[in-house]
Length: 367
Ligand code: NAD
Image 1: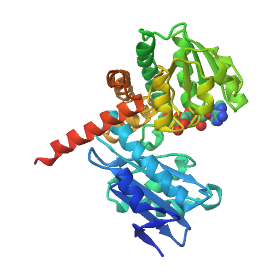
Image 2: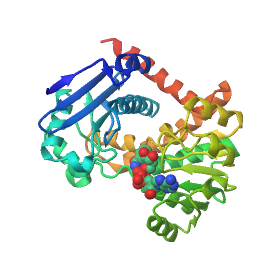
Image 3: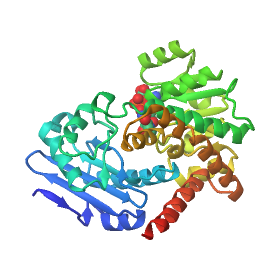
Image 4: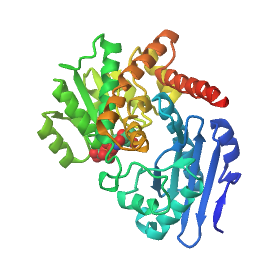
């Protein structure tokens, strides 16, 4: 069977009840027998603008897992865009299967056709296991694709912009936590020195912070240590360091029951997505411990800000960076709101995003 359909059940979860709970506008199932394409596009909210979010390809163990992932990720994009002041909604796509076995021109172009059939309501971009060349094929079937490399007329690697935003968020968090936004002399641990982590370490060492880094990629770790003067520490040791700031820049869920026993840093701010293993439990715990946690989706929004500049036409990196600089003010106002209302910072950020969607949505009602 080929075509787009919205179906009720996947595995043991009811997509309709999940959608009702999380508030999605539309979930699109894409299937093409000939190429073996199985994809789900989640459109969470388009009140502020078209739903933007990358396409991730993953060999999900079950279709249920893929559905949960796309629903969760697309919702996250709504909050990220809204809190960053962008006129974009939240969306995401997942393609199910082994990238090495399935990806080819026809497969990717077929996916591009599905994206195109939504008429711009969903705009796609690169995400996990999707390469630039893959986006090129998708782009042959739809213009609703962004975040392309410079040589293809796009905005290029967003990581330096993301890292700059994390740096701004960290300065705002330091202001809240230590009374000054200067990071000079501060001890900062950075977990993961990939694209975002590496550029972040550059900013931090330039400002005179004492930076400790770890990465499972030894070669990369040495390279960043040599170029920045940061100190290398062990992968597990990172949680026990006596530092002022802990910056998770590798994977999600590193703020959990076990690590929070060990992390001593009074300020937590990094680029990784979904840092809180349990948003409510660990967000509340960090608040109770009177530490400052900068919500990840606020401080790592530089990438989407960069892409939104590309969407406005005539991409200009300086403009994207100056917009990203506002993450400082956004972070500080969220931390202050959380302090005033005695709520976890993640909750405060979500409140601000929801209020903007509600307020702007009302404005849009009139002709
Ligand atoms: P990346 O793959 O370039 O870097 C991640 C690094 O973390 C790699 O060097 C990897 O070896 C390392 N790593 C993985 N597991 C580790 C572990 N257990 N301990 C230590 N190091 C480990 O990815 P990136 O683009 O730098 O993104 C980093 C994080 O930021 C991800 O969570 C990503 O989703 C998020 N993020 C990135 C962007 C962006 O613009 N690139 C935007 C928003 C959010």
